[in-house]
Length: 253
Length: 70
Ligand SMILES: Cc1ncc(C[n+]2csc(CCOP(=O)(O)OP(=O)(O)O)c2C)c(N)n1
Ligand code: SF4
Ligand code: SF4
Ligand code: SF4
Image 1 (cartoon, chains in turn brown, blue):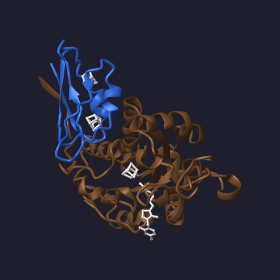
Image 2 (cartoon, each protein chain N blue to C red):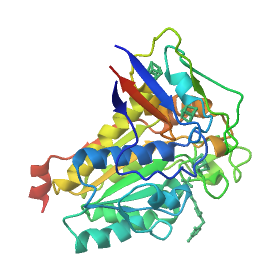
Image 3 (tube, each protein chain N blue to C red):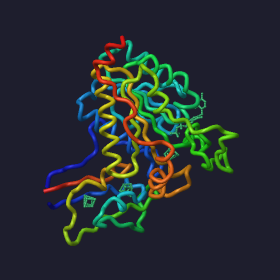
């Protein structure tokens, strides 16, 4: 029999520290699969965040440089400008990108930096104990919104992909999820397109991934997958938000 | 098409997402613990029904499943 599925080459043999059913693990594997597929292991540079994925460098067998909380896109900007022939990506949670790192992320996108952002939206601060994130859903109970998030008190969930799509500097933005085999394959395709966008020199790409955090959602992994389908997707509609053809992008400047 | 999977008992974290993904019901829970305190799932395919579709492996967050096909 022929082996048709195994651990990607760009992945170390280390056992993930993530909880059972955590979406971070799935996305790490997808990134490694795409790096293998594109044959860019030698030129890929990742920037992990503060958050549960802080140890991503233990798993992705490529060059990685840790960023301070939220500053991934600033670090990635520096790396990419010094080494423009590398494929550079930041990996960020929703607390990282949409709270403490809003300025760095927004302005890297606005400058149209030729980098890729892998954005894990799990609707909470995972690492620090499930506090409300800017992306928490209205009504969602978290450790800092025990009665459920209320718009009047806490504001509305931030739709990063839609907002970044409005910026002329961004080239490719898609929102996907990793709660079923079909959705996982779609997400892999989106990550591939985002990296290809960077390789083609088209500018800023971002893939937002709705990702289960069973531990802080206080659900089983299977119920977490259902919650993404039934609740999260309604607040964060899936799809390609932006895909600017290379020509148009060049005309802009 | 005939297939076969191997589940790494030490990598499995008992999330049961693969049980849900296998439409043929070939993956089942178990009661035995591994050295890390999880009870890894088992592949039970007495009738040779596995097609090697890889759906279980695609869903597995911990890359605990390898798939083989004829
Ligand atoms: C400057 C700074 N402030 C606060 C923290 C504490 N901290 C660590 S991770 C985190 C939030 C992580 O949430 P998110 O970005 O959503 O990632 P997740 O853990 O959910 O993947 C915070 C506030 C820190 N590490 N550094
Ligand atoms: S706390 Fe949530 S995001 Fe962090 S490893 Fe556990 S499941 Fe994943
Ligand atoms: S490869 Fe397909 S048929 Fe075989 S165990 Fe996995 S999901 Fe089931
Ligand atoms: S999906 Fe992977 S980790 Fe989860 S129960 Fe199945 S083999 Fe174990």
